[in-house]
Amino acid sequence: MPSQTARPRAIFLDIDGTYADHGLAPAAHVNAVRTARKLGHLVFVCTGRPLSMVPTHILDAGFDGTITGAGARVEVNGEILKDARFEPELAARIVEALDAHHAAYILEAPEALYGRIGVDRRLREVLGPVFAGRPQHDGVLSTDVDPLEDILGPMQYGDDLRNTSYAKVSCFDSPVPLTHLMESFGPNVGLIPSSLSALGDRAGEIFMAGTHKAVGIQAVEARLGLDRADIIAIGDSANDIEMLEYAAVGIAVEGGHPAVLAVADRITAPPAGNGVALAFAELGLLG
Image (cartoon, rainbow, N blue to C red; front, top):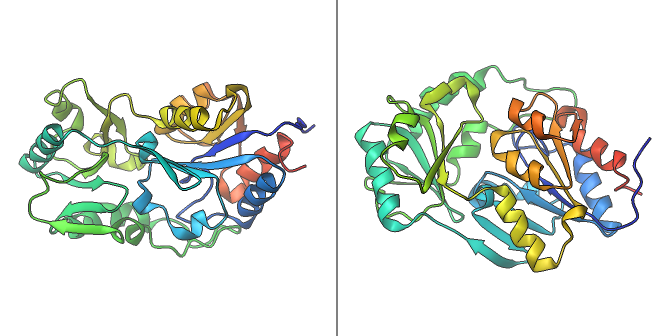
């Protein structure tokens, strides 16, 4: 039985593997977001992607705001509530360490992605085999979006990135395990596994310690005067753990990261099974 609710809720949706797959959202998810908002609920994107990597066709469904960079940047109704970046000295030190070990990485900022000249070729070599086996159609989603172009499209290239302002690093190929590099960065830097688990410990996301999606949700909560009891979050990856723990109702996607499944109050289907729409219906968000 659906759990009907009359009071407005605030729903925070991860993108990849939750709201969308391979950069595309099923029509049922788009319709669910639009219907929920018409009924007075608030719906936000809450993604690890920087704003520069969030496609316009994702946002076209209509959202009340975006939390991007896994909590580094928060925008509500056109107002930027937060735009956190690494301190310049630390940012330069991270870049120097990655370059010294010939790592293939991308620096993520709201305005663009930044990479060293030639990193596009390296990423094609590393990620090509990972994406090669993906289905072209799964019955619900048309997966004709090239995931490599999804990454490389917003890229800007340079020889020296030490002075770049950025909020997060996605490392796709490091000859040295990233856990070893982390020891030199100090307590203000965190590391989570890459969502591309096939890459192992040579890949991961380097972020500002203490910055995560729940921090972004708290910024929205404070600005809009939300009640934490009315917050719902849906996600599937390691960077969704804190937001599912923080939400009154945390929903994990079937087949998601084990730690996410462990903290979830409910489980829903992946995008191919219209999981976000099913969860909305079960919670009474669609009327």
